[in-house]
Amino acid sequence: MPEPTLHLAVALDGLGWHPAAWRLSHADPAAPLFPRWWAALVAQAEQAALDLVTIEDSLDLQSSLPDGPDGRVDQLRGRLDALLVAARIAPLTRHIGLVPTTSVTHTEPFHVSTAVATLDHVSGGRAGWRPRISAHRAEAGHFGRRELPPDPTRLAEPERARLVGDLFAEAADAVEVVRRLWDSWQDDAEIRDAPTGRFIDRDRLHYTDFTGRWFSVKGPSIVPRPPQGQPVVAVLAHATVPYTFAARHADVVVVTPTDAAHAETVVAEVRAVEETIGRGGPPLRILADLQVLLDDTPAAARRRRDRLDELHGTAHTCDAATFTGSPAQLADLLAAWRRAGVDGFRLRPAVLPDDLTMITRAVVPALRDRGLFRAGYPGGTLRDLLGLPRPANRYAVAGPR
Image (cartoon, rainbow, N blue to C red):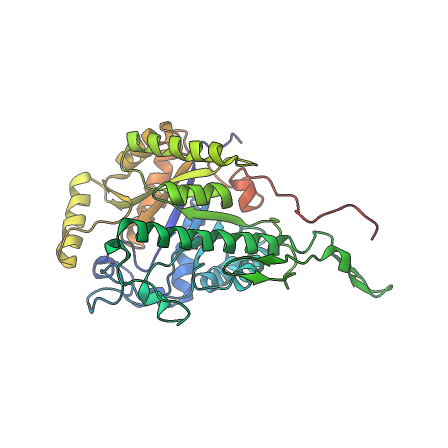
């Protein structure tokens, strides 16, 4: 089988990324609160041989405001825990990568490390993790451990830069702790020899001994090393600071260009950051984020968009570019952005399951017709699927057992 020319992911969130999605979705409005909903979506994505799905999460209710509840009752509110959803789905799937989102601002890295490592074991090596910072005061209020400003966008530039810098520095420490804990068991730490009574080689379990500004974590983990060694870490990034964070700590970076020319600029900046920091190992896999609203014809897609915006009360915008049109047009756009240097795409369906169905049943075949996407799964782990080698254990040393 020839190597795939692009990677393809979908981002799953509620009943879709448009705030009025639940009003037009063919699904029951309560569907996102039931595991079978998520299982059906991921099964559909796997049938199309997509590389992975990401599952959104946050520690506050969805809101149309920058921070805090908006008082609206006409939009979907509430969600299930992304990591637990992924663990529920894992035994029901065989090939597709599962990448839940967690906040690293309010979640202990030891808990994240054990949960994601467990997901990798349960899925047979298909786990990923999307760490995100939490700058919202509403999220901080659930924990009472720190104070955050009510609206960071209104801070003076030095104060805002300091806040963002601290949040990303904390996130960097959190990812470092998680990665050390994943390595704290060597691959051959378990002996399991009943006749001699040796279950484990204690010399192959290691203290992480991490001490930083935000965390002090002794280790080792309570979960043996994941099948992938290091599950895939993916970061959503919009600017230089998160690009640097991704280059230092991630395997995949999801970027948000506005068009093909901008995609080329973003790719160049990410590669320049990698070079500046002296990134070791394989380069970041760069996926471009794109919200999609699809129909059989461009006119029908525009009518869907207009109806959604009407129900929402205003034109919807998000942090990623939005494509409205036919599957063939989207395939052409992805081909153009691919030539700009991105390695693949993460598509955000505006309405679920409607736009996901268009992606899997129309966009994917159109990409295959253009020679841009593979016909099936080659087998292996999520790292294998993304062309990433299995990392050596940082603590491994040769020695007698």
